[in-house]
Length: 253
Image (cartoon, rainbow, N blue to C red; front, side, top):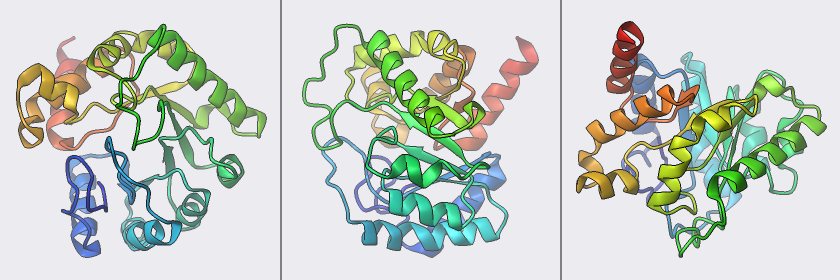
């Protein structure tokens, strides 16, 4: 859930804190294990926002959701936002920058009950989709994620807190994304939980010809394939439908 004006899927829908809180509670009631709250768009071409603005957007929502019993994940790369969210009771920190910002590791290392999502991104949101190139995308993404996980562990973070996210669509072409989906078993073999975020992304539009608002079926299919390939968590917009698909697969496999 993006408390932003310009996110690719729900930008502008939840800038009002009360609407965001209502939607977050719905996601929880639909079965989400975590409600992921972000205050800075990371869509291709997005511009950064200030620390103060990001805090203004997300903290009322995080505090209200935690007070009502929701497990909240904060989507941020800013150490100041990480600290504030953790102090408010956040259960997960999801960093698209892989905890590379100065002070980020220090902000989260001592929070022993908070999970950490380490994501790979090539470039920045403003530049990442300008002709991304790799010699071997799977090898390079795997090496980056393993290095960041080891940096966290060197700072005292327990391995079980660390979750790896290959960053679908973050500095990757459609073919790069396809290769990474197929390589999820290899990422899982690194010994950490793996998160896959494919919901409503442009790749699915390329495959189906559907606009963002009509990609539910494609998103559910992509999430199910990710789980089949070893993802422990999937970051989705359509929670109830995704859970139903996974439960049917679990019952019939």
